[in-house]
Amino acid sequence: MTGRFDEVVHAPNRLRICALLAASSSAEFAVLRDILGVADSVVSKHLKVLQDAGYVAISKPTGRGRVKTWVSLTAEGRRAYAGHVQALKALLDDPGTPVGSHEQGHLR
Image (cartoon, rainbow, N blue to C red; front, side):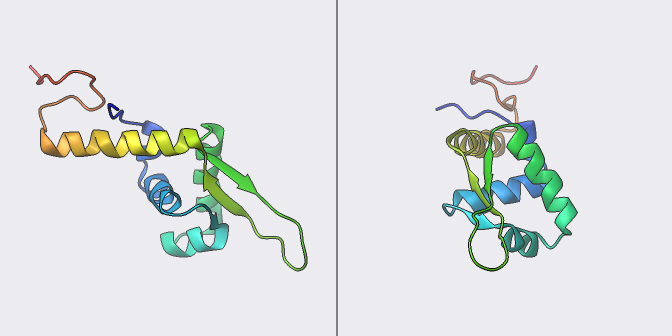
């Protein structure tokens, strides 16, 4: 698998959201907010971008008490995140390699 730099994943808060979700099956909205240390509106904005890209699924299961919002990475989101991390690692290993390049060349 060749890594690909992904502008959707790359934003710092979205990268952190993807990292948190990649380590679990799902996370509750308030947990993401608290870990990121940002306002609800900031988390909502980043989740909307990830959802529009098809990278996260958002659910609000009904039941007793307060309805909680749960977020999980989709299969496409997991692939995008893994590819982005791989592209970042390749950049760290060889700063001359173009990010997202499928070839092992150097910038000229």
